[in-house]
Image (cartoon, rainbow, N blue to C red; front, side, top):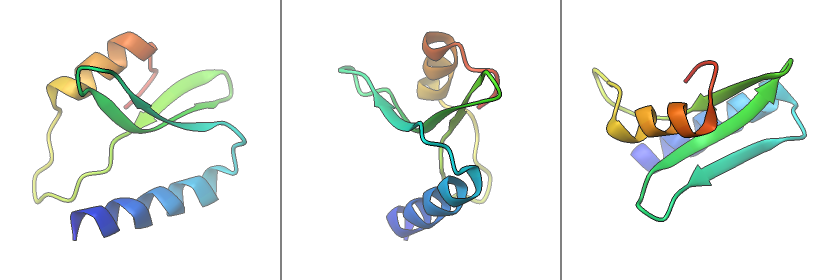
Length: 72
Protein backbone atom coordinates (compact mmCIF):
# COMPACT_ATOMS: atom_id res chain seq x y z
CA UNK A 1 0.00 0.00 0.00
CA UNK A 2 2.95 2.35 0.55
CA UNK A 3 3.82 2.68 -3.15
CA UNK A 4 0.23 3.38 -4.21
CA UNK A 5 -0.14 5.95 -1.41
CA UNK A 6 3.09 7.64 -2.50
CA UNK A 7 1.92 7.80 -6.13
CA UNK A 8 -1.48 9.18 -5.12
CA UNK A 9 0.00 11.82 -2.81
CA UNK A 10 2.61 12.84 -5.40
CA UNK A 11 -0.08 13.22 -8.06
CA UNK A 12 -2.19 15.41 -5.74
CA UNK A 13 0.74 17.69 -4.86
CA UNK A 14 1.83 18.04 -8.50
CA UNK A 15 -1.73 18.90 -9.50
CA UNK A 16 -1.96 21.56 -6.79
CA UNK A 17 1.47 23.03 -7.57
CA UNK A 18 1.05 23.31 -11.32
CA UNK A 19 4.79 23.91 -11.43
CA UNK A 20 6.73 23.23 -14.62
CA UNK A 21 9.74 22.25 -12.52
CA UNK A 22 9.32 19.27 -10.22
CA UNK A 23 12.01 16.66 -9.73
CA UNK A 24 12.87 13.35 -8.09
CA UNK A 25 16.34 13.57 -6.51
CA UNK A 26 18.72 10.73 -5.66
CA UNK A 27 22.40 10.20 -5.01
CA UNK A 28 24.66 7.23 -5.67
CA UNK A 29 24.76 6.38 -1.97
CA UNK A 30 20.98 5.82 -1.84
CA UNK A 31 19.80 9.16 -0.48
CA UNK A 32 16.60 10.24 -2.23
CA UNK A 33 13.79 12.75 -2.13
CA UNK A 34 10.41 12.04 -3.73
CA UNK A 35 9.78 15.60 -4.88
CA UNK A 36 11.89 18.74 -5.15
CA UNK A 37 10.42 21.97 -6.48
CA UNK A 38 10.90 25.73 -6.35
CA UNK A 39 8.06 28.05 -5.41
CA UNK A 40 8.44 31.83 -5.33
CA UNK A 41 12.21 31.49 -5.36
CA UNK A 42 12.37 29.07 -2.42
CA UNK A 43 13.38 25.41 -2.60
CA UNK A 44 11.10 22.79 -1.11
CA UNK A 45 11.26 19.04 -0.75
CA UNK A 46 8.58 16.44 -0.11
CA UNK A 47 9.10 12.89 1.09
CA UNK A 48 5.92 10.80 1.06
CA UNK A 49 5.60 8.25 3.88
CA UNK A 50 2.71 6.06 4.99
CA UNK A 51 3.33 5.51 8.70
CA UNK A 52 1.38 6.09 11.87
CA UNK A 53 4.17 8.29 13.23
CA UNK A 54 6.55 9.35 10.44
CA UNK A 55 9.82 10.94 11.45
CA UNK A 56 12.84 12.57 9.88
CA UNK A 57 15.41 10.22 8.37
CA UNK A 58 19.13 10.61 7.71
CA UNK A 59 18.26 10.85 4.02
CA UNK A 60 16.00 13.83 4.71
CA UNK A 61 18.72 15.67 6.63
CA UNK A 62 21.17 15.07 3.76
CA UNK A 63 18.63 16.39 1.23
CA UNK A 64 18.03 19.55 3.30
CA UNK A 65 21.76 20.27 3.45
CA UNK A 66 22.70 19.26 -0.11
CA UNK A 67 19.78 21.01 -1.81
CA UNK A 68 19.63 24.02 0.53
CA UNK A 69 15.90 23.47 1.06
CA UNK A 70 13.71 26.08 2.73
CA UNK A 71 11.41 23.36 4.04
CA UNK A 72 11.04 19.57 3.82
